[in-house]
Image: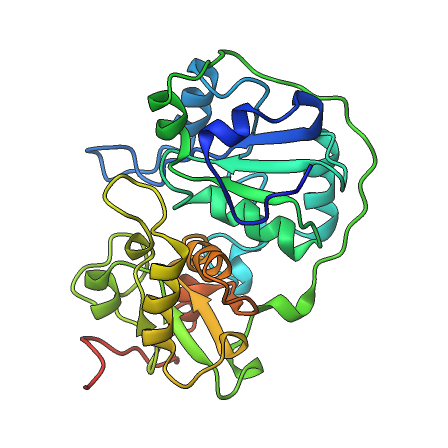
Length: 290
């Protein structure tokens, strides 16, 4: 079986042997609809009410982040420690030869891309995001199941590739910084979550939503390549550093570039929430000149 490394569609996933794939439901709500308040349990409730058969559940807050490290200036969703992430994978019974498929409620726009990137950070290759997310699976008329899934655990040891991310922008002089947040937040016109709106001086804006077509699936690889190259200008992909609000949706841009054949970019893990945790750091607003 050829392992998928960026995207997989619903029909391809349905055709995989059940013993050769680990499916992870990453649905998560940053804000409860209509309330403006966090509802960290909605994604898990949705999972229990219906999910792809065999899927385990991953919480952005507890499995894909370490919120105890927020006070260290590492942003709202600090990366988990290697040991903690290894325990998560152990609980899921992960092994290197498995095809991992991550999905959320859209086209990988929140936690699914984050899990994809964390697994790549840990050296896994056979990991893909379900194109179109859970809605694409349901729209295809494929079966769903309720309740929780447990898998037989197995020992996991891993190490993160420290070259794939930054915790300090000073680590990457000459880099091109791409901000994945929506344009109004980048410009500082609104800021629903963090201390202040705006962007890191010099950062360009590439909203992650621009990676998706109207049907919620990723644009064709050739289209994404053309769009990203237009933003990159003279910069090579390995000179690009991605950021967002807390290091989550930036992974969507990392995934899109990889799918477009432009590998090698990195993540500024603390992202905007980490940057503005230090009040002495400069904040830019509006669009970049020119």
